[in-house]
Structures are given as structure tokens and as C-alpha cells.
Amino acid sequence: MTRTTPSLADMRRQCRKTLPGIAWAAESWTSLGWLGTRRLTRALRREMPPGHRLAGLDPQAIAAELSQDSVLYALSDGRVALVHLTWARPTDNPNWPSTSLYPSLDDFLGGLAVEYAGEAAFARTFEIGGDLGDVYCAECQSNWSDGKTGEGCVTCGDWPLARPCPVCSGACGEVWDRAIQDSQDSGEAHWIGTCRRQT
Image 1: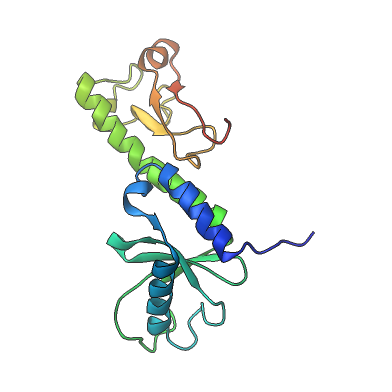
Image 2: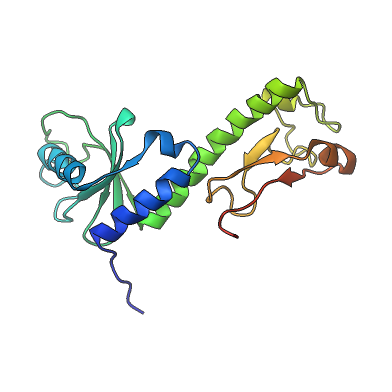
């Protein structure tokens, strides 16, 4: 079975559709229109030295996290590259600007969702803890409100008061809240939430 390479337009469309749904990513990442694509594609070409790992792959900018100078580029072979632009003249170092390659846009977006869901889960933990005060695990006495869990504790289940979606390991970007009373009563972690990949 041959794998078809998605078009640049399809990849931009997927970014526009997916990025706003990823917790926190919507605040820092943006999909690019044609003008942003041209500007950031030219910026990379100016910075890329001969022998850079993206040479010959016709990188085209599709999304950006401009607060970090990180730009996502679609490559002619269907992969995507996350590049940290330096806004400096090219160097002789073929590893600069720093670049991470992903097999596909789906792989990148899934990883981004997992990363942001983890950060969002800790922010949610402190939000819940602020509302409820100190909440402790009945088994190991870890203070969940402070983001603490007991190593190997079944009641904690590796997360305090919130966690990334346990169904897809956070790939859907959702954060689930702990069912505190159910967790305390049963001695194992219970969570409340919905996986967006299953609906």
C-alpha cells in the first residue's frame, strides 16, 4: 500500500481545525495563511546553511508558535519539521537552526496535545486545590492540592487532582478531574472526563 503525501493546503486546513482544540496550544500556536507561509518559509531559507537536514525537502511554513520562534514546516516527503528560528544570518553549522522531524502532521499534533494536556492538568490541579483547600490521598497522605502523588500508590494513580485523558494518554488534549470521593472510597484512582477521540 502506498502512502499519499498530503497537500500543503490540506496540512494548513488540518492545523486550522486541530490547533484551537488543543488545551493551551490555542493560546500560543496559530495556523498560517498564505502571507505567513511565505514570510516564514523565506525566513527559514535565509537561515538554512548548505547541508542542513531540510535542504532539498522544500519546507513550507504551516503553523507557528511565535512567542518561542518555533515554526512548523510541511516537507515535500509528507513529514513535518519543527524549527526554532534564530532570526540571524546563516552559520556554517548544518544543525542550525535546530530542527525536530516528525513522520507526519498527525504525529506532531498528537505529541503537542499530550504535552499541553500535561501542562493543563497541573494548572487544573492547582485551580481545584485552590477552590477546595488541601486534599490528601487516604492511602499515602500525598497532598494532591500541591500536585503531589505517592510513587506506586494505586489511589494516586500517578496524578494529583487532574490528569490528561487516560483513554488516549492526552492525545485528544482533554484534561480529566479526579473523582475525589470515589478514589478515596475505592482505594484506586477514578476520573471524570470524556475523550474527544472516542466521541
